[in-house]
Length: 295
Ligand code: AMP
Image 1 (tube, protein in one colour):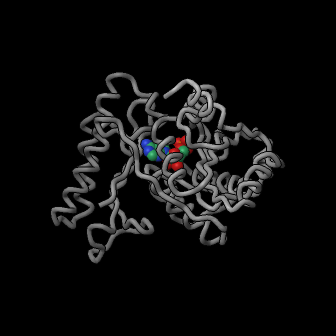
Image 2: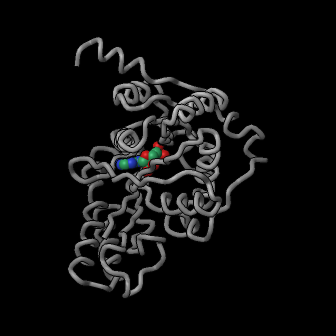
C-alpha cells in the first residue's frame, strides 16, 4: 500500500461521541440512499470484531461500529472494572481495516441518560435465563437493553453480530422481531486462532499453560458435532462425554449441551443434523470461555 493510500484509509474513520452527532451522519447517508450496517462491540478488538466489520461492508454501503463497555450486562463480581479497555489500539485497528466510516464512542451518561438504577430495561423471554443466562443472571437483559438503545440511536438497517455468542444472537433476533424494530440481524461466523480457540477479548486472562489447553473447548464441541453427524441421537450422553473431556483438561464447565439451532429449545428426535447446535461454556483459570458449533 502506498503511503498516500494509508493516510487516506486512516483519515476515513470519524469518531463520534454524541447521539446528535451519529444521528446526523447516519441520516445524511440514508438520505442519499445509502444502507447502514452497525457492529456493536465492547472494544479490545481482535480479528473476530474486524471480520464483522468486513462482512458488514459487504452487505451495506456504510459501516458504523461502536465501542461501549456496557455495565448493565455484567453481574456483581464479574469483570466490568477489569474488562480490557484499549481505545487507542482499537481505533488503529478500525482505521487499518479500511471498511468502517464511523465509530460511536458514547459515555455511560449518553447511553443511560437517567442513570442506571432508573433505566428502562428490556426483559427477555425465558431462554435468557437458560444456558449462559443460568450462570449470569440478568446478563442478556443487560445486553438487550444496550443493543436496543444503540439501535435507536444509530438507526441502521443491518445489525451484525458474531455466532460466537449464539444465544445472544437468537435472543436479539427475538427482541428485534417482537418489538418490530426496523433492522435485520446478520450472524457472522466465528473467527478462530489456528488451534481452534475462538478469538475473544477474555482469552488474555489465560496464562501460557491455560492457553495451550484452551482449544480443548473447540475440540470437545467438534467431537459432539461429529457424534451427531455420525447418527448418535443420545444428546445427553454426547454432552456428558464432552463435559468429562473438559474436566480432564482442567476446565470447570458451566454447561455443555446440544440444542435446536433455530430457537435453542431442547432438541427432539425429529430435529435432523443441520438444525442443531452444540454449545458450551467453561472456566479455565480466570477466563470464562464460550463457544458453539452448528451441527
Ligand atoms: P464483544 O466486544 O465481546 O461484545 O463482541 C462484539 C461482537 O463481536 C459480538 O457480536 C460478538 O459475537 C462478536 N465476536 C466476538 N468474538 C468473535 C469471534 N471470535 N468471531 C466473530 N465474532 C466475534
